[in-house]
Length: 213
Image 1 (tube, rainbow, N blue to C red):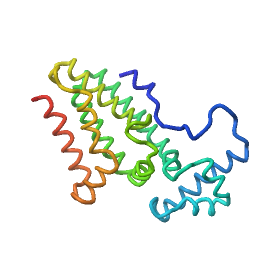
Image 2 (image 1 turned 45 degrees about the horizontal axis):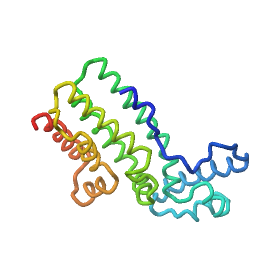
Image 3 (image 1 turned 180 degrees about the vertical axis):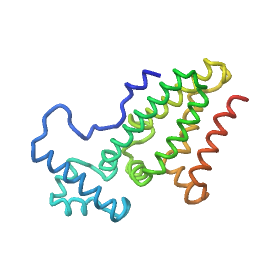
Image 4 (image 1 turned 45 degrees about the vertical axis):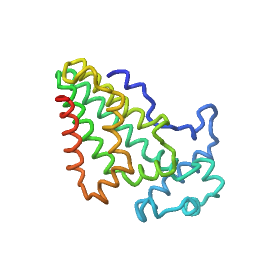
């Protein structure tokens, strides 16, 4: 599982790394982020438009869109720290699991349960990111890391004899992660009225059910 350390966390292409930004540009970017956090906390992510953020931050719309082409890009930046912490915690737990010779399927069930909590906590940001097409299923970023982590745990379970060798691991990894994309998760919460504990329990049933397939 050590290879997971090298998977990129976020698609930060909108932040140039090849040249130093001017001091005023850096200050404007930070002010925009701080203003967005304040407005989102007061009014909600969906209710705050980009122009309002620029106005409250005291910068022009052109400056705003140079730093963040869409609200999804802005939310992605705000979410980066939380996702990085989540990744670090999960990698630490998986290393502990390997040391303790914990069942790969058990590690997978725990991983999915932890991500359910993460999605619930950050749902407004994740919805905005996916609504804007910033972090699609085909792009590098959180989904890529999550998917490769799940696939790696499934492959480890096959090697440990917990799963059959003829299972389509690549397909199963996507299927286990699909319910935790923003659109599906919101559907479960709002329309099906499934609370996060029920979603987590259902995913664990699927995981352990693979052992009997």
